[in-house]
Length: 106
Image (cartoon, rainbow, N blue to C red; front, side, top):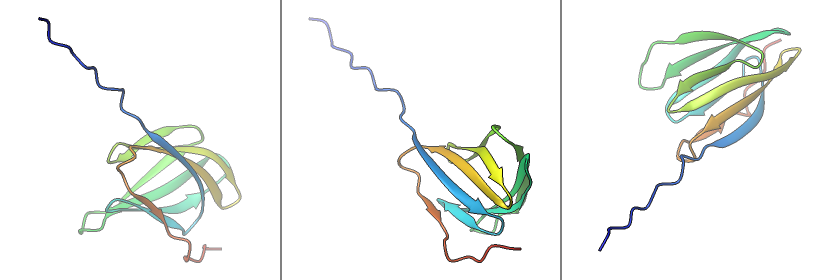
């Protein structure tokens, strides 16, 4: 008798679309991501692990996709003034929290 092989379904990702204003941030598991700068073509964001990691700054252009951390991919969809619309593709098991109480920088 032949043994049945069950194939695993492809890894499923969730897509989160959110808007961040310069100075606002989010938490991806234990990594703090903060929007530092935005212009009409690109943004700069900082990444820092809460457990004392070194801060890293990354610049991305519109529609560019960057692997951020924990299999999370970040895409800059659009920028309007100091506000950036971001797409985050992530495994459902990865926690993403946004901080709404931060005052945007002027």
